[in-house]
Amino acid sequence: MVGYDPKADDRDISNVEVAVAGSVSGLVTRVLISPLDVIKIRFQLQIERLSRSDPNAKYHGILQAGRQILQEEGPTAFWKGHIPAQLLSIGYGAVQVYKTLRDAVVTMYKTEGPLVFYKGLNPTLIAIFPYAGFQFSIYSSLKRAYEWALPAEGKKNGNFKNLLCGSGAGVISKTLTYPLDLFKKRLQVGGFEQARASFGQVRSYKGLLDCAGQVLREEGAQGCFKGLSPSLLKAALSTGLVFFWYELFCNFFHHMRKADS
Image 1: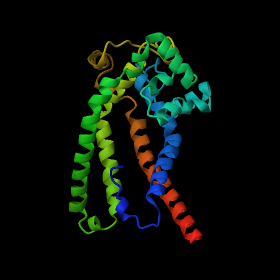
Image 2: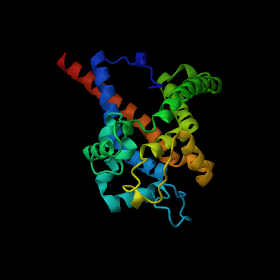
Image 3: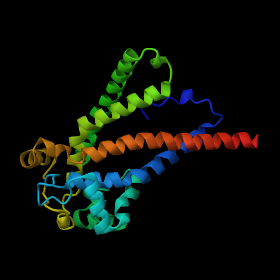
């Protein structure tokens, strides 16, 4: 992760234990932040404005959406699509409208064939390069700014500086490339209009450019950033939780080694 220096760790733990701590911390964090992912995707797929002033809007805020999902679908709804999310499945958005992963896969394959699993691939690939470029460029700029503003502190608390700058770089990069993530989700659920009827209006898109054009015409520029607030909240919590669980598991392995010796 951008912002963490493993060389600063002086605990007596093996590389395997470090890898296990990193993997498990990521898994546990994904479980805990899944509700925000679900809310983000619901916002991304909603054609209506995310506003109380729109009587047709099903969702208009994070807390309101959380309460409504809980009332209508029960607590398990916050972990819809969790398994494919853990596996980094490209069909995560589509799974949101089905009961189980198996139900989603079978229905999607029968309806549109194997190519359905690659819907939204274009914006995904397009976003990879600018996101990575923005992240590392902004990270370097923030580190220089931090060391200029706090020259004495810049030489101390290295992990804190890296964590702060890494989190800032992630938030800014996510914001700059966010519209591509929204277009990807809209394209992924294409063909499942009937399954999504209870969520509000639905649209059909012919491709990335058509999707972007329709969103801009019907929903305005702000429509390209629907779901950004839970996305950024998720990113901030994810960063903190990953480091928290990573440190916890590393300390556990360290104390286990000391106890054995």
